Length: 277
Ligand SMILES: Cc1cc2nc3c(=O)[nH]c(=O)nc-3n(C[C@H](O)[C@H](O)[C@H](O)COP(=O)(O)O)c2cc1C
Ligand code: SF4
Ligand code: SF4
Image (cartoon, rainbow, N blue to C red; front, side, top):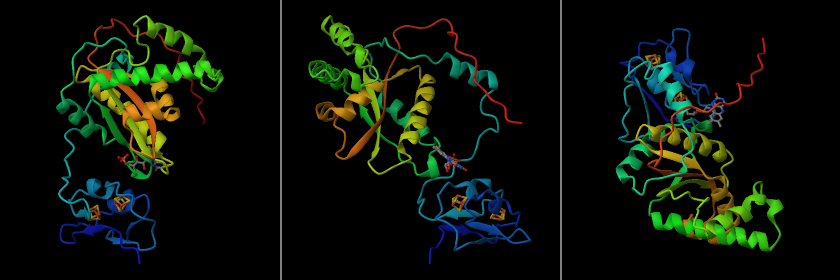
């Protein structure tokens, strides 16, 4: 019979009943006195950790987390509304980069933060591929231009949302203007296994988190849908990016130190909202 991975320290437990309330899958159920018990008929535990972190008495552990620490929450309100508004509204796509590499420790810090992004059923499907070597980023650009030229020759531009721009992009490339990687020093890609149905959404969320988090490190980013599309279609592009066999590219983000600063926030459409009730 399925054994939930939850360990309850009965001596520390005060029978407050909170763990039974926060466990969405009723793996932990509380009796009338609030005392928790395990439900062997519940669906599998998602290892979301809510039972651990909502317990006021630190009375719950999950087996299998090994030495990974439970980190205390430092502040109930880590940022003010004005701070988060400034962060989100001042983010812009960066298409001019300094020729300066990002230290690996900065990437490690970013990934360490972003792994806390939500994922469907807490499956944490996201894998990151870092194209750290700037010359390989350049090779990705060249491989995509070759692929675009082939698509132009084969008259297949209608198969791509921005196919009509391929002739312009390739002509600009000939003039020395890179509209694929924009001269970014590094490229990040998320990828997943072929059979992860939740991976596309998880990857988009993680990439958005990374994009915003990177601003705190003075970095600029730009989503690169065209690179993702090319990696889906072209074995040559995949090969330059060294994507693991059998995986699916999900998102691509160019990243580096911005060469230009912006002075204002551009206008956007008002939020489209339907209130129900
Ligand atoms: C694409 C996506 C779909 C989700 N759908 C649901 C849902 O239908 N119901 C729900 O309660 N939580 C849903 N979640 C929340 C996840 O279960 C949650 O992010 C995950 O268990 C990790 O917990 P955390 O957000 O507290 O870190 C969803 C999350 C994502 C990213
Ligand atoms: S939340 Fe903690 S203290 Fe409260 S019932 Fe569950 S294990 Fe016991
Ligand atoms: S980790 Fe999440 S799903 Fe598993 S028992 Fe705790 S609250 Fe329930």
